[in-house]
Length: 479
Image (tube, rainbow, N blue to C red; front, side, top):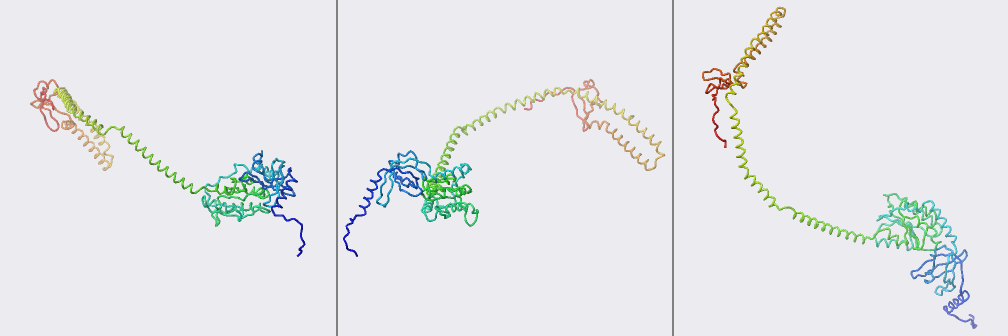
């Protein structure tokens, strides 16, 4: 061991760090640097942090809240800018950085220009058309998540789902950064869509593609064309949740819904079960109140309508009064009707005179006698003609024909006899006619002859009855 005294001064870490800070700030008090932003992000304090790079080097940036509020544009990764500020060191991490005092855009960086050209191409194909977007399910039964299985993103999603409304989650592990990550993400989306419904592995009702924030290079996989086309071809509704709120990738344009963070994607995927239960309870209470109010309203209306109805005793009283009125008028009406009927009967009896009946009976008897006198010769003539005809043709007919014709002739003679008998006086009387005779049994055939007799006898088919030539006096009213 060399014990030779060393004249090199000894410094503490803080002294060295302070000396370096003063040296850098003195040598580069004010600089103007051109480069491409990378990993530029805003903190809750209002400060911005990131990097400025070119093809060979990278410098950390820090922009305090005051200058950041004065910016006229929103810085994005990949944007080429010109920064004015001063160089300093950060002793706490032993690094140097550029404190940004002013920033202005210098043009679009190469990577950002490439992404913009790809966006315009896919937009021209209609992949970003809002009409192609699908409606997200209100309460999916199974949720598929495409993300890294080891990052904090999947834990945030699962934790948020458990808090709001636990659902079954299928995780398709992929690499979300680096070479080959775009192919894995596209294959995962296609794989979820290839699951057959009703199979051993449930088909997701919703897909979430998620990863944490990062620079534009870190998110490059989600700007690749194969990933964008896989999202556009998905038959399952898809939520993109890539990066932080300020990060925008191409799958945000084609997805059915863009979430600013993975946690926001989980919140959009399911409702809050407690809120649903409270809403159901509130609606049930409102329904009960509505039923009670409706019942009360109908009861009040019924009472109001019942008050407008007439009282039953009034209805019955009016009907009873009408019955009493009719009962009082009924005897008078019956007496009047009876008097009218008695008057009509008296009038009709006065018009029934004996001489009219006698004259009609006499004329009927005379017509009957004349018809009887003419009937005999009229019937005899055809009978004699038939007998002569039978005699002429009888010789040429066989015995059985003669017998049949004789039987027919006998039948006709019997019928003629019966007809002759029906025209006799007794049969005529049986048909409703009558014979008028005087006290000695002589037929009275005229009204003048009947007027000379005090009484007459009318003979009917079932007997005789005496009549007077003068009408009998009235016997009085029937009532």
